[in-house]
Length: 69
Image 1 (spheres, helix red, strand yellow):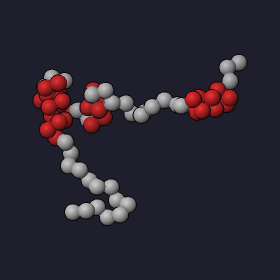
Image 2 (cartoon, helix red, strand yellow):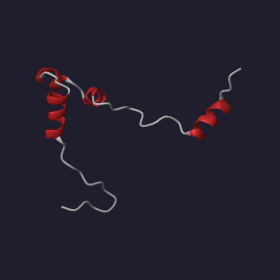
Image 3 (tube, one colour):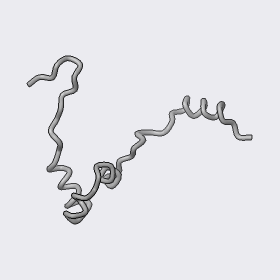
Image 4 (cartoon, one colour):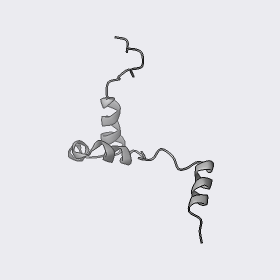
């Protein structure tokens, strides 16, 4: 089925990759794996809630707004 214009196509959740990562690569017990929240799992796999820090323009604007001294 095609997604309507402007709608994102949904993909099935990648369970095989997630289970492999949790149980094989991270060597979590099955109990620990299934008790984790998605955020905890994301953090364990190197994820970061903030995709990136400020770029140069954002940093310069913050430095002007909040000068040291």
